[in-house]
Length: 132
Image 1: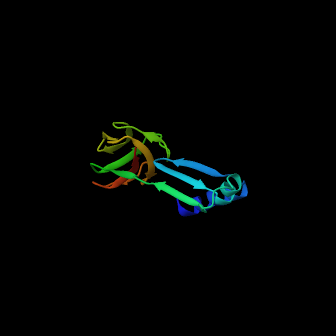
Image 2 (image 1 turned 180 degrees about the vertical axis):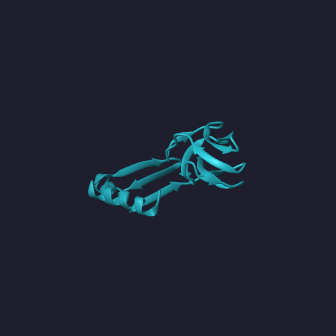
Image 3 (image 1 turned 60 degrees about the vertical axis):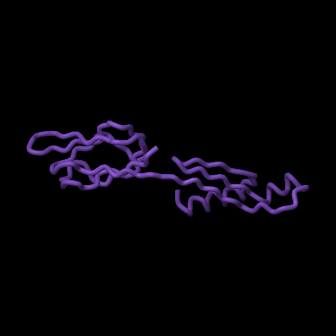
């Protein structure tokens, strides 16, 4: 979630005259409060709250790297899909021998850094996984 996304949510909060909006995006939790609506609903409250943002960000990412050289053949993967420890993500074919590339963590596939049937070198970054 980027700053422009948060600004867009704040804009919607004001346009729709909502008092509060809670959003969860992976491990990020966001709570937006509209001070204009909050003060209308509770006129006895004298302090101004303001539009607040609370982001809890403990995002950990794991990069899966190639353990050998060869042609990579990707499994059916989509950005944003959930992966689990031991799940086969691809295979690397070297001189007719296939070696599986597996996830070593549970999480969400954030990025696929290579294209299918491309040549990969040793220790080349292949996938980025957001750890759950």
